[in-house]
Image 1 (spheres, rainbow, N blue to C red):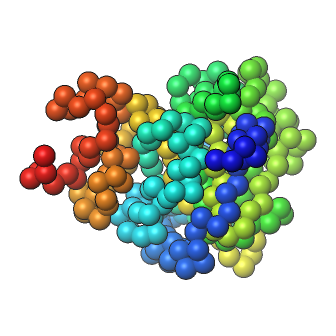
Image 2: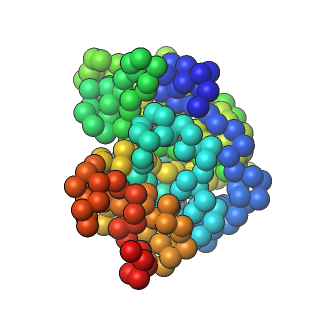
Length: 272
Ligand SMILES: O=C(O)CCC(=O)C(=O)O
């Protein structure tokens, strides 16, 4: 991570890293998402989706490019600096949203949220918890809708009431910005940042959102039973990739291990 990237991440709570996925990777990801996605009845905020929201979960089951994104060097470079040297991958999923879909309401925006929703920077080191990579599989322009946030809100020390947030956190309000980024880019943001997604506005194609969530190897946010890769998916991974799905612990691990660097799931039983 360069000094400029650290400066920008600390200032904004997100960073755009371009050229992570190639054109071919984006095409392949979209094809695989299309074949796996299912319509959602309700959006995450409980709005009727009316056919405008679809989702696909556990994408590493579909092989590449989803597998190689687990430990892509360009994003690991950032994640290992802002979260911890050792990481867990909590989930990989897609939301596909069509023109005029209901918004994904803004959430986050206060750094007092303990282990998963923390943010601090001291002595040149960033400390945050649950972090999201939103991959752009298409070019996204400023008027398209999609990923939106309040830059800098990851440092907010004060809590607002839901009523106070209503106007300040509105998508057409004074603070929320839509983040434009080219196809193949990774938009990396701390969950502590106030963020959400505006209604998608393009007629010609839906937004194929692709999300990966990471945490410190010793922390956990989502229930993992339904999110851990299947044996078939684990069998396609390198040992280093399998370790991203280990249970959360820091020391005194299984088999007397003190480092969380041996796969706990999908391990070849004959390996020592
Ligand atoms: O759809 C988006 O771009 C926002 C995703 C989001 O809010 C989240 O992952 O928490």
